[in-house]
Image 1 (tube, helix red, strand yellow):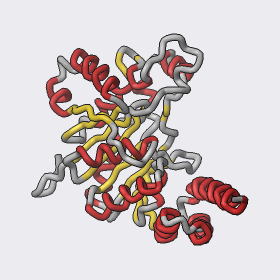
Image 2 (cartoon, helix red, strand yellow; image 1 turned 90 degrees about the horizontal axis):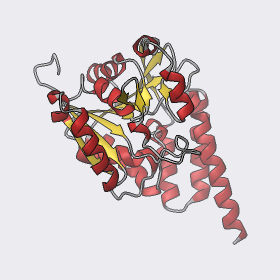
Image 3 (tube, helix red, strand yellow; image 1 turned 180 degrees about the vertical axis):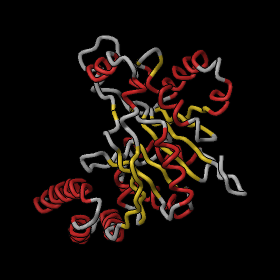
Amino acid sequence: MSDDNRTIRTSGIILAGGKSRRFNVNETTPLHKGLSVLQGKPLILHVMEKIQKVCDEILVVVNSEMVKRSFSNIFRDLLATTEELIMKVKIVVDEPLDAVGPLRGVLTGLKHSRGEIMVTSACDTLYHPKIPKVMIDTLKYRDVFLVVPQNPDGHLEPTLLGMKITTHVKSLIFSLQKVKRGRLTDIIRLTSRVGVITLHEPVLNINTREQLRHLMIKEELNDFLELITPSEVRVVYLTSVAWFEAFLHHFQNGELEKAMTCLEKELDAIKSSPLSTLEHHVAKDLSFLKLMMNKRARI
């Protein structure tokens, strides 16, 4: 897997713990989004095939034992002819952690993975197969802890993340569950050195059946995905990290006024950073915190 003298083990984490609510709106027969078929195979298999080329193991994180059994049965048939892939795949159920949403899936993957480098992908996200390799190479050979693609409009794509799994990084990410966080952008906000992969076209996230039907009529899906290619990688240094860490500390201790001050400082720092699109995530936290403080004031 590596050109170095010592092989660096890599883990691929596929997040499949969502409830597919938007995908199943007005549908009489609900279907897990990852199992919906595009050009003859489930969406999750499209993701697996890209990740397995650069990862030593693949962990599929689901939200219940029932879904795990369903996936196991389907994978048994799907992967029967692909011995290399079936040997890599393991299905795990979300750990009973305080974190919510996709962050719980990432933490579960961290607990079960054996890699020194980890790439996470949603089960319903389509992109060029070069992207996972660029992420892993960036983590191996550049001075960064985390890698994330950036769409042409400047917004980051946290449904795809690459991370170096150090003790420090693990402790930072697990600290998010103490305050019941769930957004993957929080991981970025906790990272001082970020590798940013600029994309020519935005990553495709399949949220509705209409989006899926639109893709089905494209004659050459691979040619379409060729457009979603990485153009450059740059290293971004975030000076706002300390303020976010301080916010989490004060929020956990119920010190809302101090937490508010830290968020305001973080917002100021992010506005002048190359990742200013994180600004609206900080603004959402500020709005939520103001509501909490108003409620406390009325008690």
